[in-house]
Image 1 (cartoon, rainbow, N blue to C red):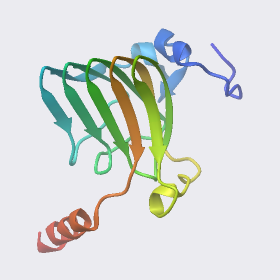
Image 2 (tube, rainbow, N blue to C red; image 1 turned 180 degrees about the vertical axis):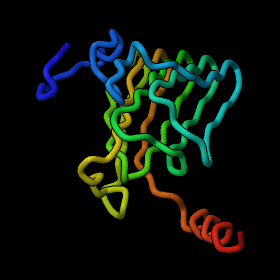
Image 3 (cartoon, helix red, strand yellow; image 1 turned 30 degrees about the vertical axis):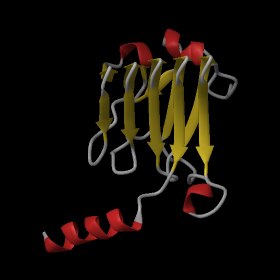
Length: 163
């Protein structure tokens, strides 16, 4: 196990379960939940709770994980994204720290953050961390830092006040 002060942690450390994730539990002890899209489209968005470990698999399909309205617990949550001839998109709000570390063969594994507006600002100290790791084979894994649209914010405000 690595020192808590050691920030040079690789994705393979997380895959082996040698790094604590949250609440003193190692990643190895944490239950895994997932989302699968095979020759299909699968989306997880709206109000939901991100598990500490989540696997996303897309084979000839598309999967979207939208965390902008999700509950993300304190500490580190790991999303393992694997796609073959598919596409996985992870959308993270700017108030959550995000780390992206993956491999691509004939594809891409990338993170995009706006240069202007609220999405360009760094998350506050002590904010939860979402770590996206995995592989893309002739496919793409894209992590975007985005805010909710004004239309969605107005709709949520109406729901809150209208009861």
